[in-house]
Length: 276
Image (cartoon, rainbow, N blue to C red):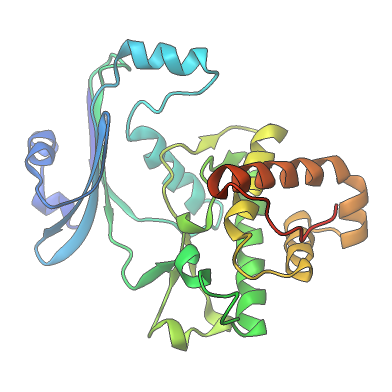
């Protein structure tokens, strides 16, 4: 079984019959190479694209994932559907312009995804790296918190959890440069979707994982307690007092996860900003 979808200019560059041959020949900058997956940044006709090429992980890896109570990522299909799902959820993400899947055996399946490069962007991790020493404007920080909280809220309300929800996986359109960012015209993109899960309702433990991961990644970004509370208000859509009282256990679990991640990463305790 072979499925190939080509959009826009890739209808001219590749054909459904030769797409997998073209994928195997793609050369460029290796952005990531791990086990059964390679990510290649390449140029074609003057434009930049990213290729994610998966080959079968084998039954041994599939069984190992299930024994560890993890859902194995078998190929590019998950990210292809995740991009479509986010578009329908009003969350900006990558533009997928080519996708293919070959083979019936899920453990040996070959697949690929091509996305257009998001130009002139910066990760929020890099943007916030020196905020402790050089704080941003109040309006910029406020609007960024609002938008990140909105992304999290929309994901979870629509049955989506990211599994790697960190500042480094949210890109900001820099427009004319980081020093010229208009706080009123911020545009964020959620990326790195290959492990994303989609279902009718997100189990609470996965919601905790997402929010705890985001909190962990922002712990050294110069945030105040007021900033944390702002995120909570926007994310829950509730008055702060009500959100903290009615979901006390949830926010305690979020903080425990964030603290544990921080201690594992830096071998020290984080500053305590949030009191649930």
